[in-house]
Image 1: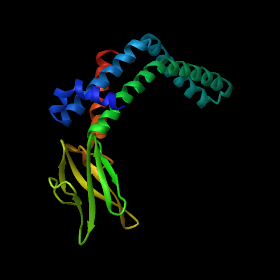
Image 2 (image 1 turned 180 degrees about the vertical axis):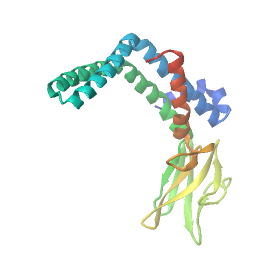
Image 3 (image 1 turned 90 degrees about the horizontal axis):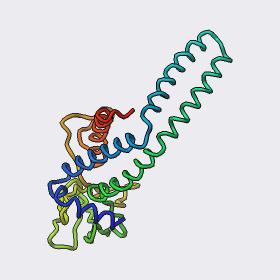
Image 4 (image 1 turned 60 degrees about the vertical axis):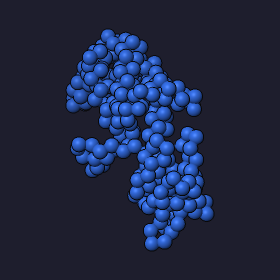
Length: 229
C-alpha cells in the first residue's frame, strides 16, 4: 500500500502542492469521470434502457392486477420483474467491480493524506506517527489537559488547539473513556462549507464528506453527458 501512496504522491505532486481542497476536488472529479466511462464501456446501454422500460411497464401492470385482486397474474408479472432485475444486476456487475478497484486505489490514499491520526495513550504517553515522522508526547492533567512533545520545536498545546507537525496542520481532540483520557485525535483536513448540511446540521466536513459532496453531482453530470443509463 505504501508503494501505491508513494506513486500517487509522485505523480500528483503539483496538484497536492496546491492544497488539500484542490487535490480532493480533482481526485473526486477524476474518479467520477472514470466510473462514468466504465459504465459507458462495460454496460450494454440499449439493453439497460430496454430493461428499465420493461420494468416500468410491469410495475404499472402489477399495480393494476393488485387493485383487481388478480393474484395469479400478479405472481406471473412479479416473476418477470424479478428476472429482469437479475439481468440488470448482472449487467452492472463489471462496472461495479471496476468501481471497487478505483475506490480501493484512491480513497485509502485520501484517508492517509488528509484523514485523522489517532494516538493511543499508555501511562499518559503517546506517539504521533505519519509517514517517516514520529513525535513522542506526554499528557499532563492539571486544570486543563495539555500535550507536551519531546521535540522542543513543537509547542505545548491544549484540547482544541491547532498545531503543525511536518507539512500537516491538525486540531487537537483529547478523547476520554470513563472520564479517563485514553487517546488523542489529531484531526486532519476540514473544509468550511458555504451552507449547512441538512440532517447533520453542520457546515464543516472532512475529506470523505467533501469527496461525497463533489462526486455525487459530477457523477450525475458525466453520466448525462455520456448518455449512461
